[in-house]
Image 1 (tube, helix red, strand yellow):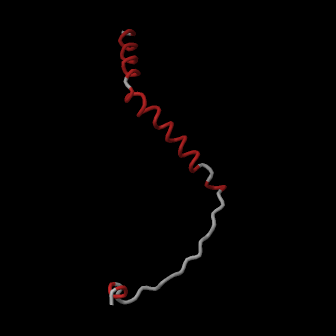
Image 2 (image 1 turned 90 degrees about the horizontal axis):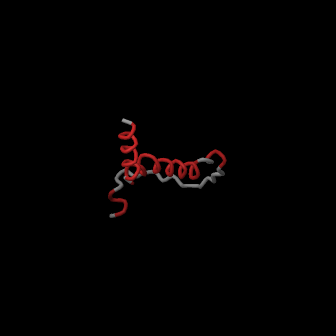
Image 3 (image 1 turned 90 degrees about the vertical axis):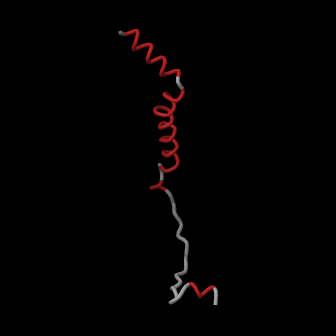
Length: 65
């Protein structure tokens, strides 16, 4: 019985898709997101001034009179 378990584990470890996608890929993605978004609380965001334009009654004919 132990031999069958060992054999089954070795077969699964040799298959790249069985090891990479469920085990290694989530660790790589978690590391990426940690470094990309980990320090958002310490970020210094700058505000951008924008203008507010009111809509006209018929916006289709504003650009094409």
